[in-house]
Image (cartoon, rainbow, N blue to C red):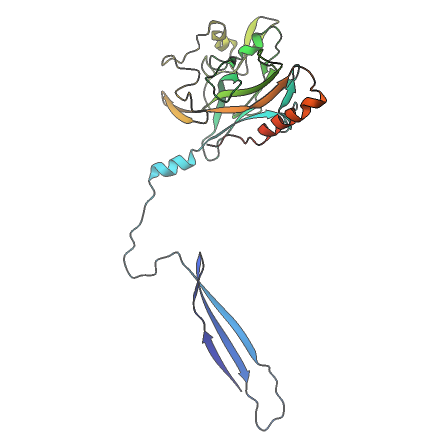
Length: 306
């Protein structure tokens, strides 16, 4: 024989659940004619969980529909990035301090996430001593929709890396340099990155071209050599008409935009590396603290997410 009782507690409300607590008290009954007992008393806690998110009324449900355009926007998000890498391209560079004679190993990449596959191009890159891409002095490293103009300099071996590791990644190497106004230069490199349809045929607008001093000619990472001929003339404008090397996003270094090209849709953004500290020679003991500080200033830079 036994007897029990059920005790209810005040309901609790947590973010996702409505919780009802109760306690079941169990007490065995001792027979009057038997001097033994075969069970113990017990207190059993009981919890019942009910989801808070749901229709709990008798009223009709009025659905709220998410616009299709919002769904498409979230699925088509792209993330552009510009990173300084080690010489073997295996990891980001541990330091942003360089000497003349060193190389900048720069990797531009595109994370398509839920977007359809696309191919990445670097339309232009400019070096400045401030984050403002319009400031002076300034030096054009890449221009004319993918012409690595720095490779034409007598003391430069700058070049695009061929072949690409994949369509959404483009790598290029630039000889370290400094501006002539001081022995030490802080440099910012800002590039205009553009994503095009994966089936885009290489042409004078969609290209990555390096200059070969031995043959005094231009050669592309992909496509026929003829697409690079405009690098010598500077006339590499799109068929729809000339456009600025910085598009319509001048003054918006982290802007993202789209433009229609026939039936294609392109997306583009500006991304910045820096500050990079370039010295004329090995820093002496007195200047190491300053170079270390400059390295830390850039070490926290994260890839562009848009």
